[in-house]
Length: 285
Figure 1 (cartoon, rainbow, N blue to C red):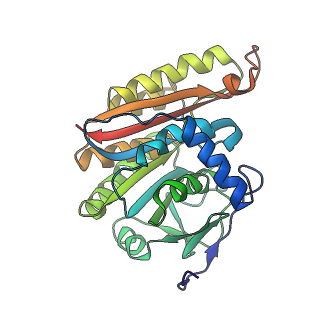
Figure 2: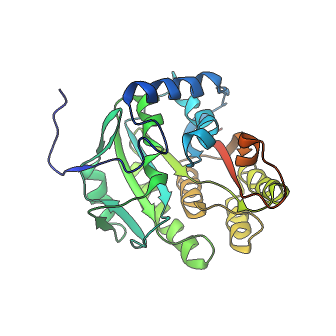
């Protein structure tokens, strides 16, 4: 049995709802998604992934295209997952006080050393409880493809619809680049794209986002998000992840898959609430 260190456990708030709550069912679901995803030959060193965070029935197949790139790949020892906050405002940067995240696949250890080091670079709010789904939902995929790793979980409270969100992303990226430079570390940005009541408008706005990501135009992406030319609830985590990856040598990005909830359900009627999903890889060419 795995030795559990001090610090407590952040128990799942979405297992059995957003994804299967039983270990065997969850593994089968993940294996199925990954089997259907394509592993792309990236001509370089992987630095970061962008993955959606809706319930697996909606965004799981798209997320699998991101995590497929980790199969038989480099052994990342640390994963920094950057997510937005959808519920209560917990500050500019929030991190759990717990020593572990729990999913049906077991415990993921929070890298206490890295959290402490990050707290010396930026102001962290250490929270005893959070109901944030967008960070947790990345963990079963990571457990499935990486096995054992330590986690640096950061929830960003400032949306990228103002200068505050962009400033927060830049501040966090500078700290992460400093702390992760000499580690075998992967960065994961958790985001969905447009949330609109029009399928065609979602496609139009999301095309702006995917083209800017693919061109690795970080400043252009930040500007487009602030101006509303594209939408992403995790815009600040995406920009922070791209800036961090760039500081660590990344110079290219590839969109691996795109879909939206209208494609998943088949409901593309005007007026129907539709959410976009993207998977992307960021790497050094």
